[in-house]
Amino acid sequence: MSNNSSPADPDNGLDYILLFRLIVWGYAGMVLSLFGIVGNIITILVLISPSMRTTSTNIYLTALSCSNILFLLIFIPSYSMRYLIGYRLYITNQPPFAFEILLTRLPTTPIYNTILLSIIYLTIAVSMDRLILVKFPLKAKQILTPRTTLTTILFIYIFSIVYCIPYWFEQHYIPELKQCRLTSIGIKIHKYTRIYIYIPVVYLIPFITLTCINITIILSLVARKRRKKSLGAKTNKKKQGDHHITLMLVAVIIVFVLCQIPLLVLNAWYAIDPQGSSHSLLFLSLNSIGILLMVFNTSTNFLLYCFFGQKFREVLVGFISRIIFNRTRQSNSQIGIRKLSEKEQQVPAALLSQQQRISTGNSSIITDDVQIKINNSTREILNKTSIENPEESCSLITNSEQILTINEDPSMKVDQKVNLYTCANGKRLLVLKI
Image (tube, rainbow, N blue to C red; front, top):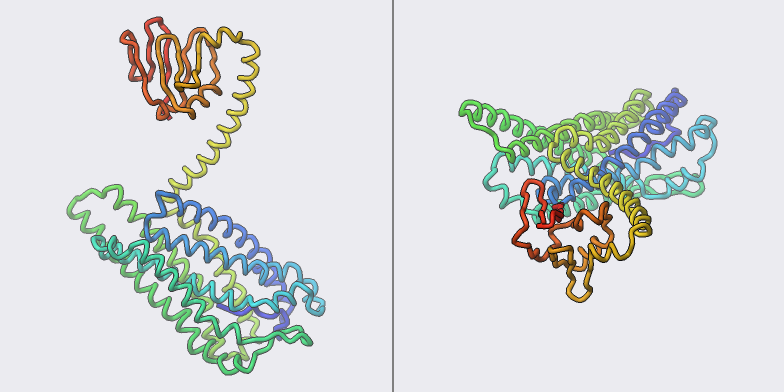
């Protein structure tokens, strides 16, 4: 968690810092942010699918993805666009431009800190969720209910908002200087919010908690694997899926901790020597890299879910396949409608009437010796069905679930393998089950 550093930071290598931030925050940060927003949106769509949204772990991950999107949406204007637009003005020491003044006047820092704090504690919550499932599998269903999960998520967001209330009163904008300065309240609380409370709440407590949870989970998985190997027991499909989810979350937590460590060191450095760190070229360079690592962490969870989450991959592939299939089916339907209209002009009306007669009162279709009673939806489908050879084939039914009854002729033979009804006159009624 860090304030948006001013480009006019006093430093002998100011030009170097500005160029470094342009590359790190401007170009690399923009690419990572756009990729992360798309990835987190896809993650949410997969996790809210009927087969995924029932577990508490996926509910936590959905909330975490929402916070990641909000974080990236704030990072893009506050860091990336700021340096992409204003780099040349900063180099030539021009006065603040309109976009920078707008960012200065907006409360980006308290909102930014609130979202980042929610990400940290949602990560702790999902790790605790997985620890309970690993250590107490029999009691997990009673403990990790959807209501408990949603209550925990709501509590985390409320805690993040309440904790960041002092940031709303810490600074105020001075129009004459076109800059923000500490208020009288901000001067009094700055030392406590930034040093004595900030580091323990944002870094020490989360890092210690996540480290202990991760070690416990890994040791439990190793012990379980050894126990199963010694007993020669086979792992069923459900337990194997839970194992993959646990590995995925362990990877997410490890990446999160590694990406947060640089900022922990930098904040401790700033707490010990605030004046010296602000003028240090090394500090400013590492601070730029540390913030980029936070962007990297919020943008790459989607890749970890795809790599470690077997069920996540299956649902994602199915989701993409349905989109492609629906588009293909719509395209084929339009082509079929055009072909049908062309054939209707070629086939005599009397021949069509002989092969298929749809009654409006009884909702039935007469096809030679076979009568099929259908509902209105199926009748509409049959009306649109293309008959390739009207003289030699029976009607094509595209959804067998819509058939109410089939009155079969005793002379009909049923071919179970191909699902064909063979009539006595040699013609066939084809039923396709979808």
